[in-house]
Image 1 (cartoon, rainbow over the protein chains, first blue to last red):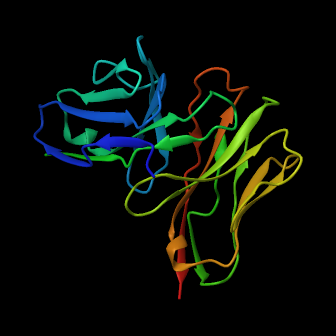
Image 2: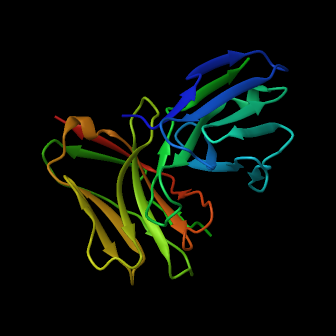
Image 3: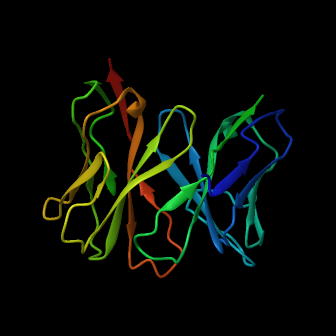
Length: 118
Length: 117
């Protein structure tokens, strides 16, 4: 069964509004979660690493003020797309590692959120 | 330079045939892990198989096996006896380092596999 839950699965919003996406680890604690963005027929690009109780680590080129990440508990990380614009339309997907941070532990992904900004 | 290269943007394969999806990687770190994920049209990412850089044997998981050629830096995914449900995007990914930190994965561009009846 799913170990990472992501909500909502789809959201359509108007330009200028903010959208919050939730990522929950189910039945396990995730001190670290990862947020990816995927353009149509493209690979997944790591946006940021969400750390419980501390600031997120953003990848180069990702605006931290645009994509706000909050990881307030061991089972929940949120990504807020602030003042969304049509170019922010994309598929956002979160992931977490089940178990220890060992090299062979895979990331488990949520089902993703398809954001459309009109 | 790309860390993960998947040279096949798309593949058509007849049902029940075996499929090999190519993946080459680039790293100078002696410790790394290689992963394959399947992404159906629904968008979810499904973990398939893992190969560690120090693993002596090729990884296998059911119909999936990984043809790991360390000297060539390749980690091809082999799917035996393909099924219609195998149609999806397949991504090769790598984690570098010893994993003591919180490391995300670097993904290739993916291969769109279509199984034909």
